[in-house]
Image (cartoon, rainbow, N blue to C red; front, side):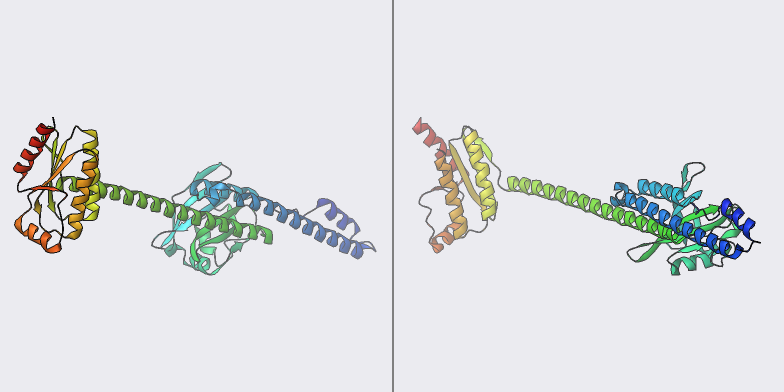
Length: 362
């Protein structure tokens, strides 16, 4: 709002006493009184602005980066506090060739608009001033060389303006513009400081919005990564099941054909699946068929013996089949003793052994 710089009562008193003997002294007193009133009005205005800025500092829309809500709150507040009919926020286009209106509030219509573009090629002096100035405050936009070119396209009712550049992370992001209508207007320091503070709040909301978007993108990336890891794990389990399937070859008899290399991780997974099947199904015999094993070492042999022992603890008989001659020679060379395990040459012999043993026990 404008400061109450004029007082009809003081003006009348100055006229009545101007020609008297005490006229100069009274005029000096009147001027001093006016100065005191101006100072008091400035202090009141400053306190009012500080209270509003404190309220904005607590705004969740600004601190959490809810841009649409934050811009509406800031433009409405700016129009009301500075007493202007139009307050708008503009940001630079991605190619820096001009400004895009994010939100412009018209107090007379209580309406928010956006989407208009303002190109630098049409107003080069104004854009140059934005790059260099902390603030553009002009009592008459058509007389100020920084804004004179704006007057050609602005409505005749718009006479004065304050534009505060918005800087985000040190770079010029955009501008908040206050348009005054009517007679020339001299902007007070408190008013221009208030405009600059609103520009800073827009920068804060922008940074909060960017941080919120980054965090959201990070969460989405993590979720996608976790989903992919889950898919990979399911695929790994499926591949493991295919590489060592549990096959019901006879009632109560499970065959496990082993293919490729048997490492500790694969052995643990296979043992868990095997013991789960033995404990939940009516299984009396397990055949570990080694026909597809290409290489065996001491560790592999120990893992096989562990499976045999674990199966026996659940009351099932376990037999090893399909040990090829080269595998047998390797085991002998390593000094590995499979004496605890029953071994046969083929899967067929293993099945016959299991069935004979089951008949004998029953």
